[in-house]
Image (cartoon, rainbow, N blue to C red; front, side, top):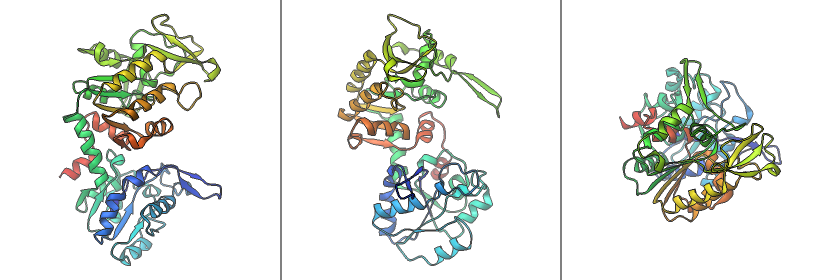
Length: 394
């Protein structure tokens, strides 16, 4: 059984057929699948897609994934319309050596998200070996992740191994200077990574909505800017003040030289109108108007970030620098992407949103590695144990 990382959204083409939006994760698995096929394995692919909540949702079927994989491999892929049951049993029993079938979205069964052991056992009942390539799902405790590994021998695929080895190099033996670029809207999923990497990294460049929290901690009045300043976990009854967390980080040893926050931002009104965009320097004014938002890093900050990237030997980037989808606020993300493209250093871009942004502004073929796992990558860099990885180690 091949556990694929194909949690990829779909869209309709002009003919009304569902097609996948981005084949990056499928392309990343080709080396492993070719190896299995060349060695005459019978390959049964499972994955989940989206969050159908145990229901059958047409746009979340794995049919487009099977079609795209077939095109990329140049080999027919038989698609089965369930992941357990008589149809699946018959298809597996009738397979020839070197053939591939793809099963239906495991999340069409509510037992998947519940990590139901009977469901996991049913998934693996016709299987001899699990090849786990779903690194983007390595932090999930589901039937098709940790569940299946409990019932059959399991090994990592080439893509999974590449992700782990590359990220391990950042943690254990980076070429210095090591620069970590953190952006995106939410700070909650990045604070732990910053803390864990603090003694490892030489510089942190903070942009996007994440920077807004650090700027508020530095005493800037952020006006109407987006701020994920408080996080409440209803289940655990935990409340976290991210501004307070940011203050603690900025008060650490060497923080003024290590934590680089914007010295200016591009301001827009709350309707994100590009015609309202203007550059605000915090040397001149530390107050953003209440009807305005910080929507990108400013001109001087872009130059500062670019200079640091040019002088770095390892660069990891997760999260856009601003509202790059909106005209007038794409400049910071564009500068960072271009600086990474022309760098001769080791460059790693992590997370789907960041990769999508980079594709708009640079030649991603010149990036050393695209880490396709957003949440799993950040948890790995935060020093958290990934449940699937821990099981594979055993």
